Image (cartoon, rainbow, N blue to C red; front, top):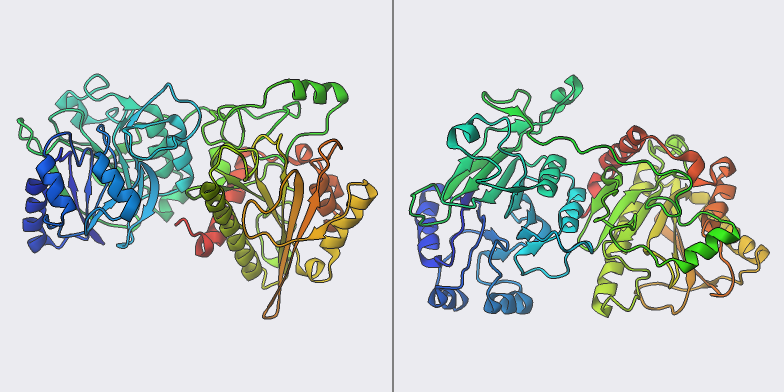
Length: 539
């Protein structure tokens, strides 16, 4: 059990805030403190100087995000230079998932929604605005002890007797529907926010509609708390302390209600006529008319790209894990079925998509800085390495893996595909032979062996393949590269065809023929998450 302390907006009153915290810390020994709202303001510059000079004592780890006021330039400079602003003071970022040194998982979305920005997650971290893409991108965080937001979730006052008695409604406290969706998806133990006026509001705890089976596992209960600003004239509560209890809740406490958030309508299932699917395996083969039409049309932007988190048709239930620059999701229409590797210990298909969060055609795209490209590559590689470790462990080394990437300048959104394969096929070179033989049959050229440790080692269009397996205490792996001629048509299903042939799954070659129901997809994601817990570096 952790003991936490929460401030409302401090608005630059640093001396007063940290003095109060120091006095309370002597008696209560808080594990950490969190600021909901604005830590700084455009005033109290002398106190900001004291903070940066190390003359203000902060008695316990204290976390904050951007509120409704942009961070002061001196604070931004300090963060960018040293990361640490002052001892025990930590900036969570505007959009982040953080596991603190105290073991508390905080999902953060600072700032006010800017509905005019539709190009996905915002690129800067210090301005007091966020996008719908920012909110949607955090859904993949899966769970949270604390959800910290500047805005309220829309409709949180519904079904609440306390809200009715206090006169709180959408006019008093306007909210964000995307933050409501985020709260509903993460089911945090506490949702902490700043009040838009001089008032404090603590809603009755709420829980989602659950089955009897769910109740036996424990009910996810959320408490929403919004604090008034420090030193407000109404003398409304601006500080709050509580114990964070992680034990399963079987019976909701008295006065709790069903969630005030309506379940969003089910996402439209895309037909086989769709030209591009986010979790499919690239474009379908098309006739010449369809290909010509695609070439003449501009590529979809982030709001229409089915790999982008800001797309309104984004199938969030297929996301397994999300990090800062990349995320992991199951493939739509996976090549292996849920029971293909049952004898090896897997109760899910194991076919995954590893995708950059940024909307980029290749990892070396001109719109990415070299530093960002390398950071994204390393994070994608970390997902791949984690998957390999999990697959080998669960299967007792009976399974290895193959990962491939088709990198082309005219791609819509770069991604890698990962799939289990019998370890013997890797160790005996059968996977490598399968790729080489089909490439020669199709007159695509010859594979060369090349190690890939960074994102920019290859120029032009290419297919790269990684094979991996463990043999006793030894790792058997290989990296293959096939340069692609831009003038020669390339079948984007080529890697899947190779693997279907090797695994004897030719009847599943076309992903459109084996699309699962949403319930089946959710079941596979849940089974995988359980197996992946030990290797998921985002938790």
